[in-house]
Image (cartoon, rainbow, N blue to C red; front, side, top):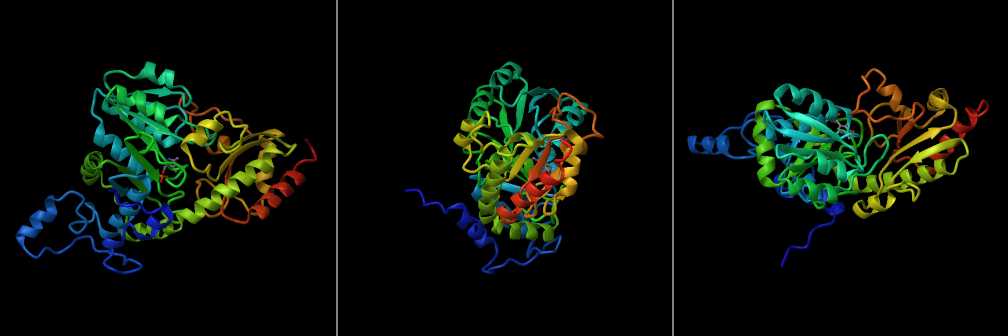
Length: 393
Ligand SMILES: *Cc1c(COP(=O)(O)O)cnc(C)c1O
């Protein structure tokens, strides 16, 4: 009989127990190198996969604690920790691709993923095609015998589109390729891509996993075999997270379950408030019944998260004045923090060449990363900001 599995709220606290030698709170192991008792032990450590007491680039006990906790959450056999989300995706791409290979990339992924797959990889002889997030038919037409990886992200940012992960996984596997999912926005508390058919999942742990806007980190999780290949390339690329940052990430993870409960609740409340406001033209939130892919979202997610995008009446100028008028939500890049953050994506990406990889977003679109403040206060703040900027529209 299978061992009963701990629920996420429990595994967040206990999955790393055997890797911290009884200490309730693990120590920060700042050493970059570890002594071996004999030449046999040295050789063993030097050649063992995922060694965490040999040399820092291979791993360290603080990395192992994080990877055990995230593996349990993502239903993965193995995970590794990197120095950022971009470190995670570039390491996995370079580990699994070679010249002559082809990749397919969802059109609406994180811009860094688009640049990596369509621009940087092209210089190494890897070709790429972009696919619409809601178009399995288009995916089917783009996959070729040389297709190795398909990159997806659901919900997407900033328009909260949903990718049918089961359907995409079926099509990708039919051709012998691998499905790679960025699970940063959903988090494993709301969605487990590996259980839906993805082969690898990666994170910007800088966002919800760490959760406090105070550490940059990345994760790659999946089968032992695939993650081992990624780890071997990680040794060469060296996107190594510092021990203190790994420790901070672990501390952030301990509260992920309670934070996500609040992010989900607040995201829902803010989306509903905006949806009912006469000065708001449109709201993008997968938890709203009016979201065109709400049923699909509900079939693969257990919560809808804290990202809410909306278009206020009055165009980009009104949107900017609204951001000025908010007292609790700070104007800042990034997402997934305990603090509410907001940006106008068109402004954030204005320096970027617009291209087929970049989502066309309304100039006035505001992306809210709803934090864990009291929802009544967040709504009151939005209400006053909409009111003080409404006169002219
Ligand atoms: C921030 C982000 C990334 C990049 O991660 P970094 O930790 O900033 O390198 C990738 N994907 C998504 C969805 C993100 O929000």
